Length: 201
Image (tube, rainbow, N blue to C red; front, side):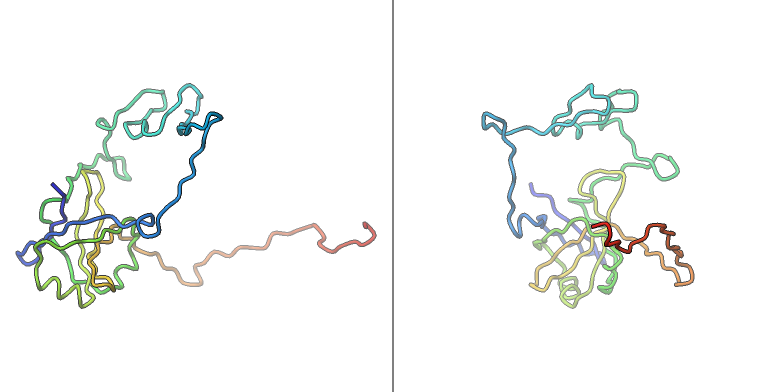
């Protein structure tokens, strides 16, 4: 069964099928395949810092090595915050209704570091939500593709082609400073003479 993005607004639930949009789907892609002397495709591998192990592609996704060379599977890893405190694992937001915030003006996207874009196909959808999206308003929802220790923001937007999209990323707060607060970089003294001496030639 296909997973869906489900949102709830004013007691009404809307659902969307989704498909990731990436450059390869828009423009196609090319791959360079390294071959060995016999014409066979090479397999990528990495050597550990001490040179004792060769890690094949996909092995690192199963876990990590600690500083002592011990193997730690992914299931034993926990998330910690900036203070070193353990944070709870958050469940996936797919397949269950999550609250929808908004509407917001389009400028809210200027403070978002977008990491993924999904094209949406509406299933059951609230007509009022469609009208707001078509008018250029934007809505935000919490998004986790799978269970994880962090959660992203997703923004529902309507495209110029009348399609619906979810822009997934992290909201950031820009830090502003006045011109008086900018650091002053002094020019380094250069003892070298840049003038050419034609007697050298």
